[in-house]
Length: 179
Image (cartoon, rainbow, N blue to C red; front, top):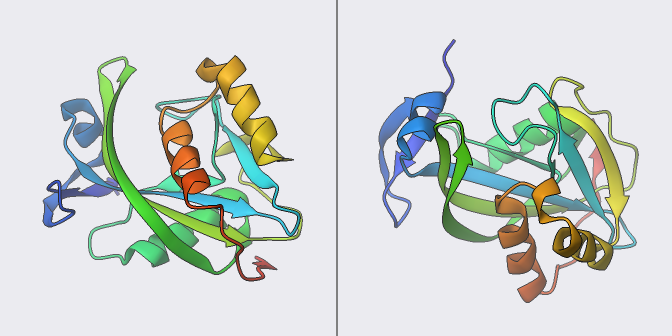
């Protein structure tokens, strides 16, 4: 089945849907989400995307990201992908959103209305190796320093979302349980 994304205007009003790859090739604005999971000590769970991903392969990023399916509530989509990618489930809270456009090379670009969710998990993830090459818990300031030193090792949306969270104080989150 062909995966579809929800096309939106600059106010996040739904306009229809498009095949995911076609939307990325045409640069159409569509809904997305970025999930940031923290442990009880405030460390952030990062993932390095699998080498087989069709864009941003082998780059470090936030805990998980993705797109809601047509008709799927945003929170449900974020929790679904967190389970699929990282093998964990936890309550999530929407913190903010942002819109960005970035050239990904090879005829693809990201043009997303990105909703950022945060959650808390104090355990060991069990990621899908087709989605995630590796993962690590990292102090946010260490992540910022590494991002400044080696920005090419990270996805284009990660620094935007991370700084948006930092400006909002990286709020504490409820407890989470393993999948």
